[in-house]
Length: 190
Image (cartoon, rainbow, N blue to C red; front, side, top):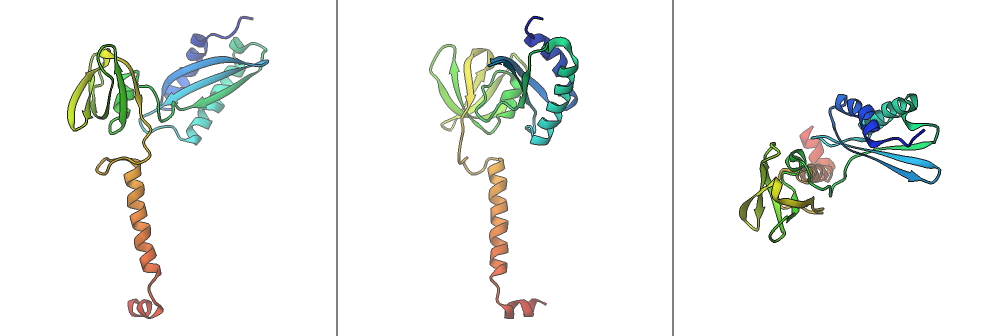
């Protein structure tokens, strides 16, 4: 039997991913010794947690095992998300990157780095970036390459997971202060 095709696997996998409320970003088949590696890349507005990835992996493995598409050669299945520094190739990627720092290389002109402020949903739209305090709109069709930059510490004022973590840290600090009360202060409270 011929090697499985990307299109054939996409046809089997896409309905599973859609039922889970995610987007199928890519399917990559690569040889790995006497096996094949089948990597299914999925993403969603709220990201992909391990339980959801495991559930999708289990269902996809069952479908691939039942289908003749994989033939007799063994395979390794990996269901994964695109990662933090993903390339921005579709409007939904730009929308999910709002608040993030991106590196943009246009087809013509100089590369720029800016924070995504807004992103259109339409293919013929664009994204508005804050580039050194100046708003610039970048049309999607003018972008040769765009990639989210990894930031270890985002600026204050952005609504990010890091800000939520800092709020939690502030709550923990308040609890630590309470834990330092003397026995006498505790008796007064009771």
